[in-house]
Every structure is written in structure tokens, then in C-alpha cells.
Length: 118
Image (cartoon, helix red, strand yellow):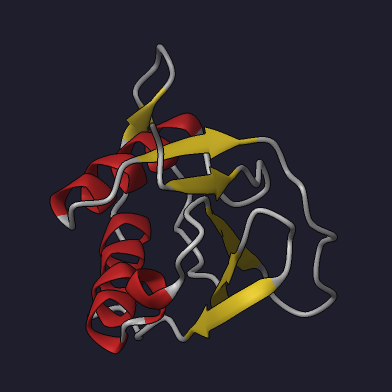
């Protein structure tokens, strides 16, 4: 069972991005799955929204895990990858302005800053 849901955002993420995020989160010991958009879009920049499915929030609010999650997002979304039959390149990625982690009810649990791309 997933611990974390990755909210799809078709303007900023494609299927490969989501798969890469799932793998990156697995390397951190977290099981993740995609989910349909659930939150309202922000007016400034884009926000990657994750949903924490466990009752306890101490794990996801741990500063060490938070830094690792933010770095994983940066690393995944900073890479280009091939798509489509013609092998066209994905346009340059924009990193999210932040990462919001919400609980099952949609309440904001924590917000993570995304470190700049190297």
C-alpha cells in the first residue's frame, strides 16, 4: 500500500516524470503512486502536491526526510528524457516553487523548499 500519492499535474509532469519520482521516493523507503489532481492550482508558479496517507505525520515532517524528498524532486525534474515515437526531447523542466504535503483530508502538513538545480 502506498504511503504517498503524487498529484498529477499535466502542465508540468508527464508519465515518465511521475515514474521517475516513484522510483526516487522508493529509494528513500517510501511507496508512492500517482493520483488525479485534487487541489486548486496556485496563482504563482507551480506547486508539486504530495498526499501523505499515514495517520502519523512525524515521518514526513522529519527535516532529514524532507530535504531528501526535495532533493529527489529537484534531481528528477532537472533531467530531460526522450518521449514519443520520434524521440523528441522534453522541453526544459521548471522546478516547482515548493512541495506541499497534505494529509488524507487535504490539510497541509508541511511545505518543502526545492533546492536550486545544480
